[in-house]
Image (cartoon, helix red, strand yellow):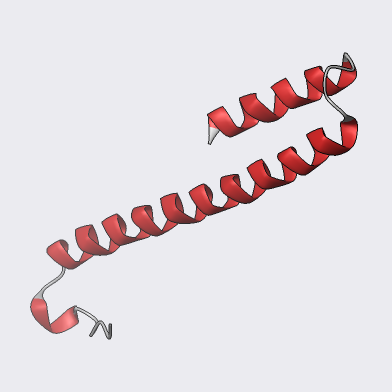
Length: 69
């Protein structure tokens, strides 16, 4: 996710220097923001799954919630 921010910064600098059209920079930044959102969601889902696994391993069997997939 950090690399997405770095790339957005690069686009900003290119646009400020006139090396890339500002509208094109905006469009590319929007694509990168969409990618960042997907990466954040995937990371969040992975971390929740890890927490659920850790909790399930600590709780006695009769206290574990039924997981419906």
